[in-house]
Length: 574
Image 1 (tube, rainbow, N blue to C red):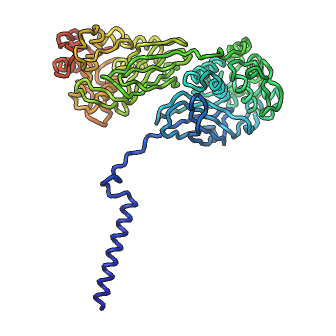
Image 2 (cartoon, rainbow, N blue to C red):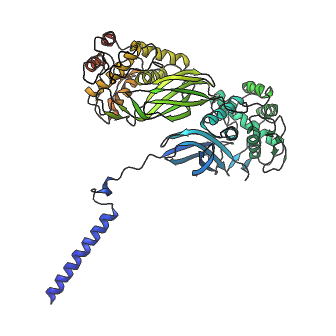
Image 3 (cartoon, rainbow, N blue to C red):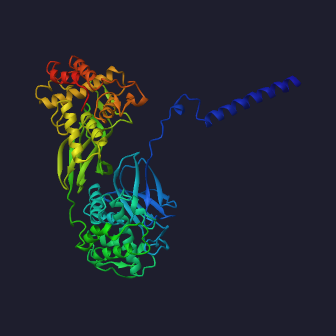
């Protein structure tokens, strides 16, 4: 009897252990086999971060909204501001223009030095052109100026499109003499000697915000957040005249208070700025002479921020090439003080690598950047995907507002030139952009790398109808692919990245500022970049490619001999 009971107990215990083990296995997602163990990693989550400034606004709520059909759409996410007004929003995989709106919170008013709360009917806003999924957008400033620009964009024909967003942000910046209102950090005039470390844009920005607070104080407002709402309403029809589409703006919030003076956004603003600069509240060290050009501009203004009606819409169009490319994202950035600034626009390239983007009313140098995408590798004929850390770029000298710039190429040669311009003294100025584009062109015997469409040697007979510039450009790109293939790289885009680094210091010697370059980012084949990779090594790769079966251009190494010899004998100096 005892034996039978013991046997039953052992069987029950074994079954319990098996059941518990199975439960634990399910809870842990399996043992690594089957569908449970092969789940894909979550998609990259984009972020938008920055600072809310009416004086830093603490304890506020910042909400991000998508934009659909030019209007504010669904809520994406929200977050609070810290004691310095900083916020960070997780955007998930959202792609498109973004409207930010701030409510609540408190701040230190510049004109009175008192702590104030945002009134329930007052908000601050900012509007950003299209962001791509997974992008990290940082340094965004949400201020009374970005709020004015947002209402202007909202009331433009078509609403908050990329073009109207860029046009409004640029126009408000020009009106108050701030180059980039969405990224320039306003000087805080309540901070002792803050003017000493600030540039002119930051000084103009900070003093404009202080002047608005001074106006609110002069008008007897209990909270200067109401002046922000009034300024937003006044700016909505593109002209600062105390009216919103013909109707007088009421200051004080929610329809209460007094009529907004017609000169509040012009000479009244200049007078308030002058009064604040001379007041005991101004601890910045900035004197009237420093902001006199801005005050003069406001005094002489007729209030017109931007012409009514349709936006003057400039465009840039062209082609991306590293072999035939598709599914790439092309983004245009403003260039500010020689460095990459705010995003202007972004678009997807076609299956042939073609792209067109609106630049709005932007004026200045432009940097173009290509991320992602697939391309047909010239050396192997296989489809490859751009490495996650690989990009291609191009730098364009100043474009005029409303200009239509066509035929712009983005390829490995323009990428090398852009990195070279960026590292030159003063960065991507017009002079440096032109110098770098010319230098790289001379190195590879292409007279205009920015506008020459490379010959595609994978296309049968392509050499017969190509100019010498097109041949040299296309075969150079193919030689880079051939070199990468010879080094065992799994994606030849990694070699483009290496060539960009090599070119950055002006000498093709396998080093970047004295440090040898690791090819492939340490993630794939390639090893350390050889000192002759961009000279005789590339010439040998070009010779090999011209003699290979993958070359369908109809050209031979003899046709390319002049360029091959120039690279073979080069000392690497761009």
